[in-house]
Image (tube, rainbow over all chains, first blue to last red; front, side):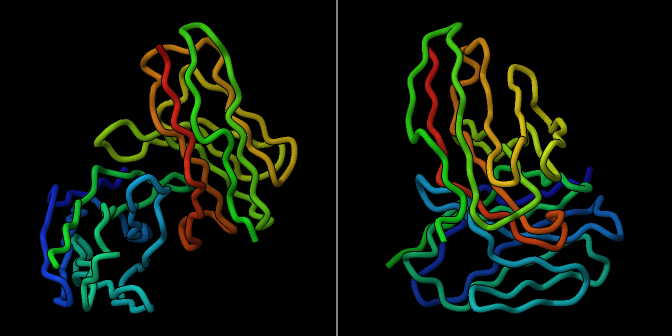
Length: 108
Length: 114
């Protein structure tokens, strides 16, 4: 199984960019990298995913290292609503494996 | 669309009781999943289904059963509740295999077994 490693917690000031790192050194060539976030008392919410190239959507950007052993989720301007636990996950077939994620605190 | 709907939102069970956690989705997704989340932890996959009539075990299936008689519904059954099953349970669905298709989660069922 491809496992991921993330810092337990991070802080950011409101309206500043946030870079959330993730290591996935055992990822296989066909495994996608996915990011989800979980707000308090809610189910996880899809943020972004990618395979090799950097990806952008309305929520965030995903920068994937050339060797694919790490990636970074970029929130361009953190807001208070971005305070959540962010999960970097990879899949094995039909199964997604969630770690403990990074708890992001946004400081007003 | 309602998306993924889970019922009940909360439940307290006594040890040895049984119950069924309901999950239904209205997105015509083939793939459905059950996860559990213990306090301060990530999600662990209990069971998943790739279509009606097909189910398979995830990481932590012991003590649970599932069925998938329709595309919409994927109930999770606890036969003999134990304190170790105190957790928040999330149901999710996806259109394709999750590799290239986002998971859509419900808002969870918080279960306490005492």
